[in-house]
Length: 105
Image 1: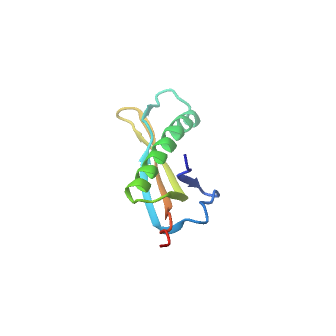
Image 2 (image 1 turned 60 degrees about the horizontal axis):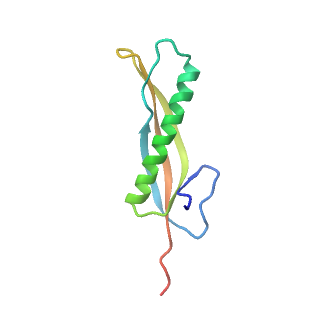
Image 3 (image 1 turned 90 degrees about the horizontal axis):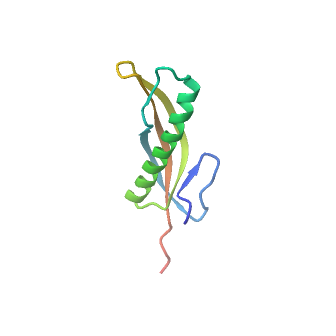
């Protein structure tokens, strides 16, 4: 299967045509933080966030009829709900969408 997402320094194939820049938001699972170390929470949530981000970017590539995406920027912040004791991460990912060039007739 062809690679769909290229992260930061990875470059998409040179044969692809640039379509435009897009942005998606994703969030991790919520975990209870009553007695956990902040680094452990971040690590556990980061894995979940990145899986959600990959899924969202792949959905957008398909929805926009692209061939691949090159993630060029990301912003991740932590959230917490003191009422429930939950902690989670929210990320915004900026990517450039590429499409296969039209076939010459």
